Image 1: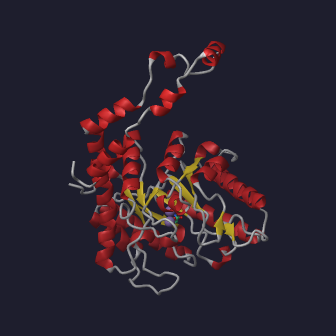
Image 2: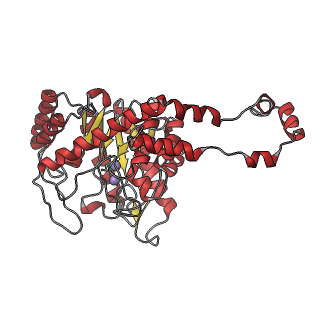
Image 3: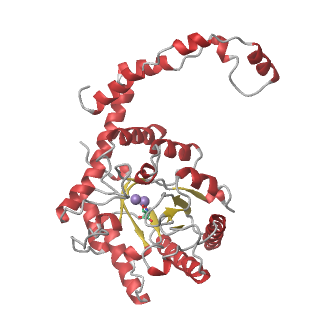
Length: 386
Ligand code: DIG
Ligand code: MN
Ligand code: MN
């Protein structure tokens, strides 16, 4: 039970299980693993795929010959283990050149360099099989709004994405873009802070059909938002192109905790939604082990992410099969023949009937919805007593 299989589409970025434990107040605690070692680690724990930023795989100052060797060895490890590369992305946040942003930098030379770096990273991702390309604007923000007009930054980000979409189309790549929002960190404030902001922005692009979102659980929760609602709006709009799963204690910095390790109820409703609607994309764990962990602890972290997803998936199936819960849900949505006539697309007749209708407002307000019982049964199911 709860053993991962390729059908689950569990993926990890090279930077996740490869995290060496450096933080703003401490030096690394673990030795760095090579991309090949990480592929074999992920195969050992049962992952389906591996993702990367360009420089997770090919160092920013690698020579073409080094790039070729690295890619050859990485591809050999993929072939040996059967792991796939569903997603790739660009590191536009580590190098000091990007300290004022990449696509939104006030320095036009940086904006040009960011385009060049991203085109090359897209080529690398496509070369290794990626079909989704993530854009996380880790430095696209400000500490002071004196620095630039936010609408100038929006226009710069749009110009960059339109240029890169045209590049992908010109190259004939079967690639879709997934934009990943975050409210802050490492910049004081990041542009396009939430899934909602990204969904609104996508509609202003030249090729909105190529572009969706990559919601991350910790990022919406950092903003105090309900992650399921963000994911559901993306899904309902046909824009859930990828998802970053992890966990987060609200009001903290981006902790990228093991999935299912803190907000168990939120994780349950998220897994239930993804399974209920038939989401068929990667379940990507953008998270890392506690800094306290050694190499074995990193494997415990990766196994825990996947086990928690599978445990919650089984809980969701039990919720959907629980007779008492389903009976409560069946009684919730009250409709009777008189009301049905009023709801539906506008017609003059329907509007006239509604205007003429009388509603017993006191009776409407007197009704109890039974959510305490429903939520208690949910909690008891999660606590394993039903
Ligand atoms: C951080 O949440 C970001 C980066 O790790 C990466 O660009 C993206 C891909 O999952 N998530
Ligand atoms: Mn994060
Ligand atoms: Mn992420």
